Image 1 (cartoon, rainbow, N blue to C red):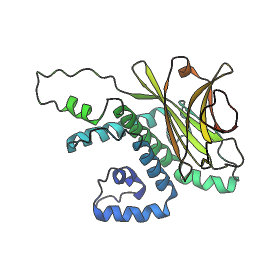
Image 2 (cartoon, helix red, strand yellow; image 1 turned 90 degrees about the horizontal axis):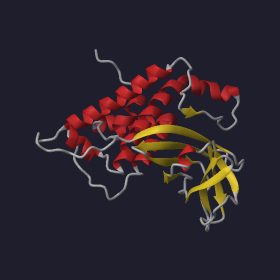
Image 3 (cartoon, one colour; image 1 turned 90 degrees about the vertical axis):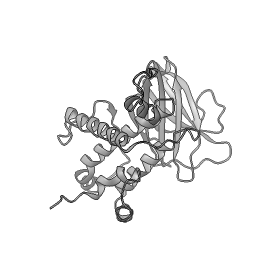
Length: 273
C-alpha cells in the first residue's frame, strides 16, 4: 500500500505545475482551507515574478528538473540537520522579531501545528529565490542545463560564480495603523557583488505622490536604499545593488514619504528590523 502524501507537501509541485489535473483540482480545494499553504504559494509567486520579463524562456529537460529539485531539497534537509529542526533551535542567520501582538491562547495552536512545516517551506522558498535572482543576472536555468548537459566535450563555457543568499532579515510593523505590515529581506552575493531583495506585504496602498522608502543605518548614518509603491493588496518588491559601504549596514527601516525624491527620512517609520 502506498503512503498517503500530505496535501501541504504539494505546494512546490503545484507551483511548478507538475501535478496531474485531478491532483491540481484537489490541491486548489485544499488551498481554500489551508491559510499556510495559500501564503506559501503567494510568496513563491511573488519571488518568481521578480525575474525580468525579457529573459529567454527555455524548455528544461526533465532530468535537469529532477537534479535541480533534488539539490534544493538536499540543501534544505542538510540545513535542517545542522540547526536541529524540531528541537526548537533558532536559525543563526535569521533575525527573529516579535510578530503583531496576540494572546497566548490564539498563538500556541498555530505554532505547534505548523511551526516545523513552515520553516521547511521557508527554506524551499529561499532556494527558489537563489534560482530566481541568480537567473536575473546570468546564472540562469539555461546556464545550468548547458553546464550539466553540454553536448560537445570540446566546448569551454565561461565560469560563472553561483549566487547565494548570505543574510536574511525579518521586518516587523512599527506603525499602529498598519498592524498587518511585515516583510522579508535577503542579501544575495555573487562574487564580490551584493544585492538586496526586499519583499513586503500588509502596507497601506499609496496615493498621489506618496512612496515607501528603504533606509540602511550604519554608525548612525542613513543611506537611501530606493523607493517603491505597493499594489492594491499592500504587496511590494524592491531590489537594490549594494555598495561595499552599504553592505555592512547594522539595521534597516522603511518609511512612508510624501514623494520619492527625499535624501533623508521625512515621514513615519512603518517597517524595520
